[in-house]
Amino acid sequence: MYKYLSGVFLLFVSLHVVAQQPTSPKIKILLLGSVHFTPSTQDVYQNKQINLTDRQAQAQLEQMVAQLSQFSPNQICVEVPTQRQSNIDSAYQQYLKGQYKLGTDEIDQIAYPLAKRLHLPIVTCVNYRGSFDLDAVTKYAKENNQTAQLAALDRFAGSTAAGVVAAQQEKSITDLFRFINSKDELTKNAAIYTAYATRIGQGSAYPGTDLVANWYSTNLHIYTNILRAIRPTDKSIMVLFGYGHITILKHLFESNPEFDVVDVADVLRQ
Image (cartoon, rainbow, N blue to C red; front, top):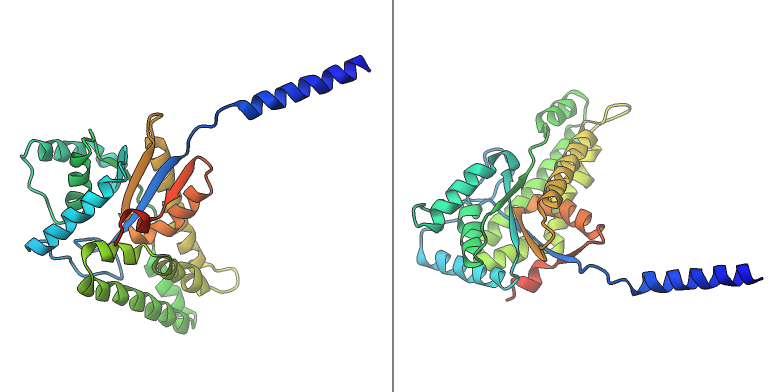
């Protein structure tokens, strides 16, 4: 009986000690989906180039950077392959010295000015370029009587892209970012893959599903690159990426108990 009671007491003490252990605070992460200011030639469905030459656009950008600075990220992760970190380091250092003329992409127009404002030493490259062969999907659909499914995908993706183009023309830059990071728009973008691309294929052939699997794999590698970049002292991270990546990245970080995913609308307030 004494041994039994002793065992129970020790178990109680152990559980009490574990319960008293302080838990590490979660890392806040802001996943900021972006349109490409200079549209990528690799994207099938593109937004229009954003005109950054006038004073109004620059004022809007400055206002958005000011709002993002309130989030105070310890790191800014950008859509540049990890292998190009030295190139980004060099450009950013030149920018800090006033020896670099900003280009028209979102990294130059958002990441660099924000990093400078926050006195960050670097801008972190975390991109991973995986396989994405849409031509194989198109070829299969045309050769296997699935042109109707291909046409449905094209209509939906085209309509989604057109909605973003319309928002570009009607909204301020901050409101555009709020729009493309809304739940509805992120779901539409993800549905191009989950609701349409996966329908292309029959029997033992899964060309559409394989395309989606490769897209998930690409984003999983990006997620891993972000995890690898995090330092023990980091309390908050901002990820600036094409908004098509955000739904998957958001799911991955929301499923990781070490992170607290911050809503873009809570940072970019109206």
